[in-house]
Image (tube, rainbow, N blue to C red; front, side, top):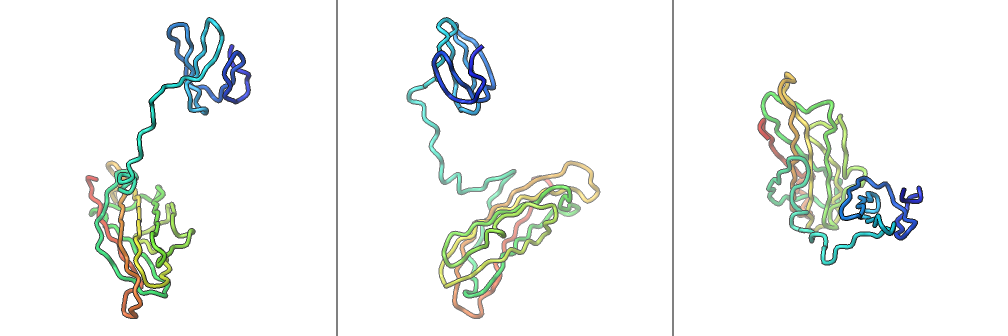
Length: 205
């Protein structure tokens, strides 16, 4: 019997563990997958000493920042978007519409979801409107935006949809669309107060 019965990460002759989740034995040593400590613990079965396995020179992979900025989510796809203009000093809106394949509808039993972020001081979105997941979401989505002073901004929008055949036969599908849309907030009174993002999914996605 090894361990104190209380969570911890102590080596030696009175070791502590935190939800160990796996065991294996090799060369008179017991290897323990110490799950919540994110470690491999080693018990020498001859000396009853416990140690934490160290592997020198092993480092986690470097994060690929470019990959992090690309599409993420189930069955994700990036949608190219041209720059759009938005009138400064107004409460505008972001409209997102996605064309479903003929004979398909959004699955009313699944939570459709979206997430919006803005890079730039000229355009903001309230935190309560920045992300949502609900079975009641309908297309097109309309999300309020606050256009302050003139300047440049970039909107990143991600929508994940669950859709099925109208006759509810066959397999339902899931698709994530991601837009990265450059925006110019301008002082032109004739500029639009609404930004539009459009996408399309197919019956084979």
